[in-house]
Image: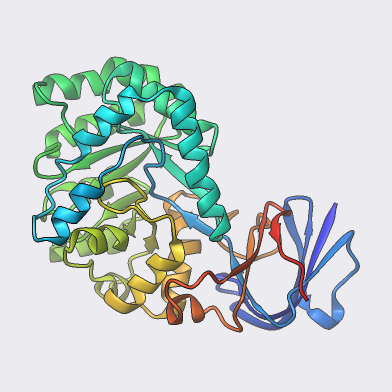
Length: 386
């Protein structure tokens, strides 16, 4: 089955060779982009969608989420908006609610959030565990996450459970918990932060995960500067996420390594914290990604467009830089080249906007601009033009 998306007024490809194309068309053959060119030269296809001059962009890649959870933390959010500081302690509230939920309840909630993301243009999602913190519960969360995406991350090292010895719990994560979770995970992650896991504990978790064949990801430098960023680069992690508080040595390490700096502005918005300095990273030559960090406590948003707007307004990024970070940058954070760009041979993931230009993603924050979503050549949401 082939699909032609025709009469695209502005096609933002996020591909450095193609750039931004005008009066363009795209043909998908099955789940792959087979042709890109001027609309006037577009070949026939089994199905045609007329974009009528609207803009089109790659499907968003959300490379950092915590979608499998139960419970509500709106009271915590309200308290923060009244001046209480964010410390990360509310994670335990979600752990308790998630442990108490049934598989069916968790599956329903995860599917609802995933559907919400797709309707807003996200076509690839990474999902972490981390709200179970027992061997059985972490494996359960990853089994459920695997039903939603292939990009699953074992985050048993999210926090140390109440009453547990930090070193003994780290050994549990590196041993029986990792053994139970590895069959359902592609990645391993650790929250290397004050009050969670120190540098030595984080190194142990990541080293054990690498030996089990998992790719590496790291939560680091959200609340304070610490060893997490440089540890991620040293061990060759695909991504280090948050990067709110960076030293010059952290930036130099990122600039000289392959680790992507994934920024999560929804967390700063929801915790009234300082935003990361994306401009500093970009000027140093660091690959930057944007993701939602969708979770019930510190960033309860499923909108990549909202994160793009925050990145432009608060983090020193141009609209083009922010969109690249939300597509090609986040694809790089997952070590993938088949998504996050519109190019021949890439997966056919596109979003048609109810706007003449991609700039409207930042220009019109909070506006539902998604007119159509194509995921792997499959028209998940095509509203016929009228």
